[in-house]
Length: 157
Image (cartoon, rainbow, N blue to C red; front, side, top):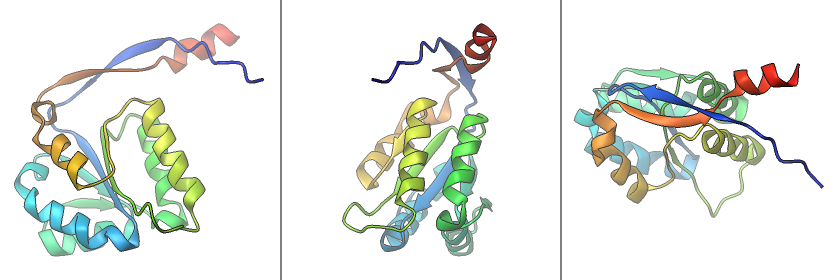
């Protein structure tokens, strides 16, 4: 039986200018590109990150400034997970293909788990991405609860 972590939470203030991660599985890259083009003006107000291939396609096709990380299967999903833990990603837009198995599926699940742990908004398809990008919270300063990992560690010593 697993013991549940007794993790206290704290509040993190997120700027009106969000740090947004854009990710898409191969079969979903064209759909994400279409979505980014439709919401280009709104996305231009935020700092954008993406896994390798997706970032290069989006940047080339939209002219948006996007920081491209490694390709997902080569570690990009894990890089984004680390950035979420470091509070360097505020929103995750991940168009994933639920009908295709991908070799790096454990990395994908880990990325989604970390996003849930650190309580960041996640869109997994066009409908949820539309909700996120049109939310007033995307352009306002907001407070979110996050694990108080520093306090947790200090109590363990």
